[in-house]
Image 1 (cartoon, helix red, strand yellow):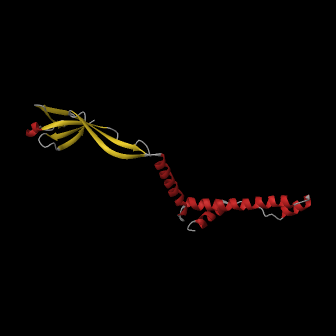
Image 2 (cartoon, one colour):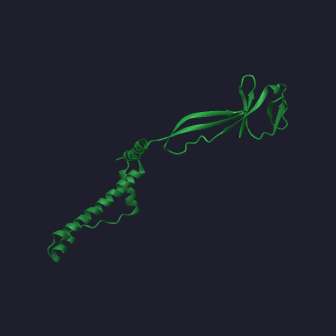
Image 3 (cartoon, helix red, strand yellow):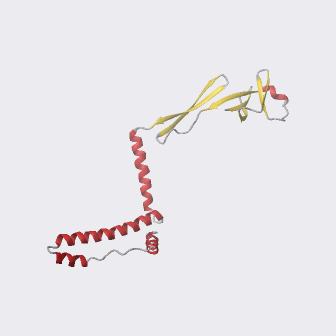
Length: 176
């Protein structure tokens, strides 16, 4: 809990500190916050301690809009609460669509290493897909085992890649 040192006449907050204080001096219903060893000022009688409680002002979740802060008073206790408005399903859908669009737009950044890696992987997958398509075409067009063997022999195998080749492929995709 926090407490504010408030000037009685003007209501101006002079200082704010955490409760409990090391010492609270009271005089005729007024009080002054002091630390150990601090000299009590002569004008101590014109101050009083006003306590207040801060309620958590954090957003309860992603799908809320901040409303107004509401202050209620009960004696010298002030309670501050923040109002939050839950979004409608349409607002949530719009927000999520925009968020996903912004994530997908990162794929357009040509100097993005993840984009370059995905493009290099895509090229490798396309090579394998081409090989599979050739195998399926050979099987579909062959009427004899001999024709199938001849068609399969004409298909070029996809070579294995070394780490250096993968690194070069990714590097070549950066900036393109």
